[in-house]
Length: 301
Image 1 (tube, helix red, strand yellow):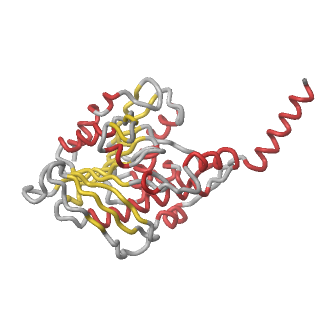
Image 2 (cartoon, rainbow, N blue to C red; image 1 turned 180 degrees about the vertical axis):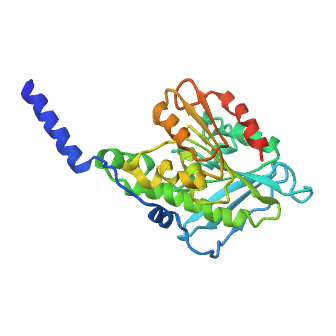
Image 3 (cartoon, rainbow, N blue to C red; image 1 turned 60 degrees about the vertical axis):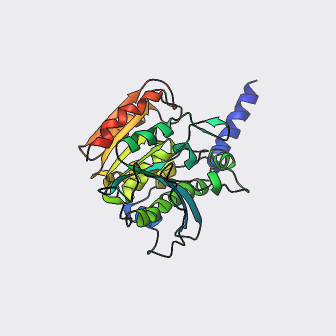
């Protein structure tokens, strides 16, 4: 038995030396380069007519690398008759989900257990337009060769961090291209743009606000808070860019993906004074009442 345990320990050490993720350093200049998205280009925008019953508008555009991005924008009132432009909420979905989770209580037979559709309803009630797109490798953008589950296996088992980091970085860059479009719309108030997201989406919201000054407020809902083993997508490395944001951090004390000590440390490290930390009992799936507690976040300018 002792020899078997010794062999197991040896094999574990060998695996770690070959495949285990190791921390690495990344400086501000390299982060800026990674999240850059090039000069403005032809979006090849395809914009459906506004559905007057739902006040929604589906769209697609060509991103910085030519990839097709699809999504939807929803308005709190008819833009044609509105007296003033609307503030905008950029909504980011979690891993394995799609932008449809921001519009519907159920999608493809599965309930939207994150209650993000209710957060959309709250934003609309507070007079905000809401826009959401599919992240890379999600929704209509799924890669038939490598699904998200395989990508995560390659990350955790074989230490292949590049595909995971690229998925998040390029999703943030897609949102920067999205911002180029929506901030030019006369019905959108470009001075009042907020970002929110659940889980991976909360992580992406922090990353976007950390690299793009057009975001003025962030509500990060149980974000995945990483260390320097995935330094390019660790929100802690973009803290300086959050200094001018109003940041609300929503965390769970028994979160399966980010422990409470790391959440507290991240909140304490946030450089701005305009911040709040809302803590919930339980795990990564928050109780539905978290949505109502975000009301004041929308009301503040």
